[in-house]
Image (spheres, rainbow, N blue to C red):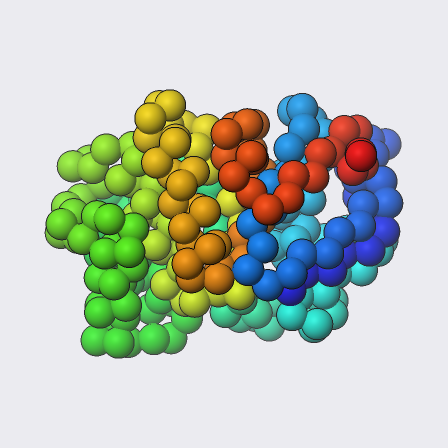
Amino acid sequence: MIKASNIFKSYGETSILRSVSLEIEKGELVAIIGPSGAGKTTLLQILGTLDFADSGSLSIQEKAINSQWKDKVMSKFRNEHIGFVFQFHNLLPEFTALENIVISGMISGKSKKELNPMALELLETLGIANKANNKPDELSGGEKQRVAIARALINQPSILLADEPTGNLDSETARETNLLFQKLSKELGQTIVLVTHNEELANLCDRKLEMIDGQFVN
């Protein structure tokens, strides 16, 4: 599903990633762990085509990613193949949970009529179907994050990338979210790569990759 080889990335004189390579299979749940500043988020952004390596190669579903693609081509590829979940949910406050999910799908060209049942099914799977018509300020932190996960999944991406998805949640809500990622991987076959400091979440994953000073160790 993902193959990265000899990824190097620097910002100015600062080296962030140094010869990073990894392969991730379809349906795997993989955690990238390590101290702050190790390069984890930079790597996740490169895997998500939000940033590009200075050198090295990246392929997603056996398609080589070319940083020279036009923005429109890159955006289309990203929208079709990659879903993102971040620490802060970034839901649009004026829209309901259902609308927040559907809007993401409409950007890819799907119709609201087509998307509504898909969004409701996702909310059902994530255990918050009863919150479909609630706005973000009427939701708990965990419910907001579930809506954000549904939004990331509405376009049926090949890969779900999550950056500290439980970092803004209390311990009990974080535990529930941890189990949710495991469910998405085991029951739905979703390929998931996440960056986390949450040891419990990392231990639920199929693999843990530890990064220190821009390189994987062990």
